[in-house]
Amino acid sequence: MRGRQAEARRNDLKLLEAAMEVFTTQGFDAPVSAIAKRAGVGMGSLYRRYRTKEELLQRLAVISMERAAGAAEEGLREQDPWLGLAGYIRACVDFGSGSLAPVAGTIVVTEEMWQVSERADAAIGELIGRARTSGALRADVTDLDIALLIEQFNRPVAGVPHLRDRLLAIALDGLRAPETTPLPGPAPDRQWYESRWGERLP
Amino acid sequence: MRGRQAEARRNDLKLLEAAMEVFTTQGFDAPVSAIAKRAGVGMGSLYRRYRTKEELLQRLAVISMERAAGAAEEGLREQDPWLGLAGYIRACVDFGSGSLAPVAGTIVVTEEMWQVSERADAAIGELIGRARTSGALRADVTDLDIALLIEQFNRPVAGVPHLRDRLLAIALDGLRAPETTPLPGPAPDRQWYESRWGERLP
DNA sequence: CGGCTTGCGGAGCGCTGCGCTCCGTTATAG
DNA sequence: CTATAACGGAGCGCAGCGCTCCGCAAGCCG
Image 1 (cartoon, each protein chain N blue to C red):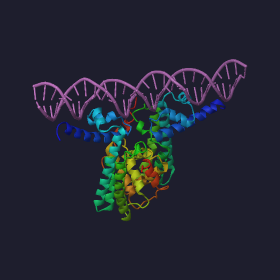
Image 2 (image 1 turned 120 degrees about the horizontal axis):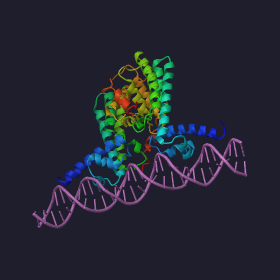
Image 3 (image 1 turned 90 degrees about the vertical axis):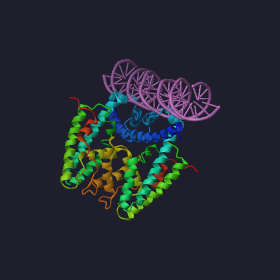
Image 4 (image 1 turned 90 degrees about the horizontal axis):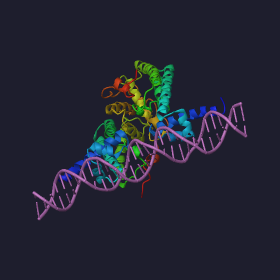
């Protein structure tokens, strides 16, 4: 694997990295040309690997979910249930997992995406359950609240990365038990949450 | 004030309300036609009152800041410093003050906008100072952190209003003293924050 | 009641900026 | 040196925007 083929391999990595960065900072409707430019690659090279913008988004979604699953599994390896959960949340915000949520409903969900999401959900469920039963996590927060919290903090804060960490630290403190004020309103509905991405094809 | 003039007056209110709703839910680059449609008004009526989209945004910014100032002043009338501050933050998120922040740098800042912002800043500064010295607010958070927090929660949460209230309740709990984890990194820089809207003309 | 005025709705103009294609150019292999 | 594979990026066709313009209806005065 040398010469042109090695360049192609490198280009693919640069493309994925650039796409993630551009989409998370500018929104999913950023022009494809901006991704190519950021990757230092021509439009031709981009479209040879991903036949459409949607295909690129689907690939990013899978990678994003795989990272989230990995972060959750790593969180389970931490002995302290709270540190494990907090580390997972910070990791997700750091690498932008969930930042593709605004795209929900606008792209077709592939079978691969469903599979990875199930693997991630299992680890995350265990991570959160452990934190709750240990008494570190406030009792009235659900796993979907946490998913939405990650989603919310994935949006850039005034374009300055480290300010997001400060706001997230505030929210993490608010997640710890005991709560001083109970959460208002009904908890997010699981069926609604899953249907955001569209119906699963049989 | 009757007949056509009364209709014009009503149309203006409907327009401002619709514009606020559309911009906060769809982003500031939503089409002007969407605002006219939501207000139940023709394009002609909109553009007779506001000669450009920018002029409409400037009007909304002033209204938004006036509401924020009002909410801060009302917060000062509350005896409990913490309830006053929390009420102010919730009010700002409710009516979408600060949701125009993404527009910073893309519209010209009018003299009126500067004046209202100074009035608001004075009340907010006092409200936060009072909460801090009373020991209710964690010590390491600055007024700009709180402004950015409001800004962040002004973005819609998965398109469902009441879910935002849940996430905000978590963050408000995290704002209370004593903090369990200190905020990371340097505090937001005031000069940077003010320059986001562009240089002030003499 | 009828002309005149005022404000109305919305079709469409001109244009920007997008996704994507296509092709001349350049680097590698034999 | 020729053949081949992969490259960069100019530009096509089009969607969707801000804004204008005009035919029409509702209120006002003799």
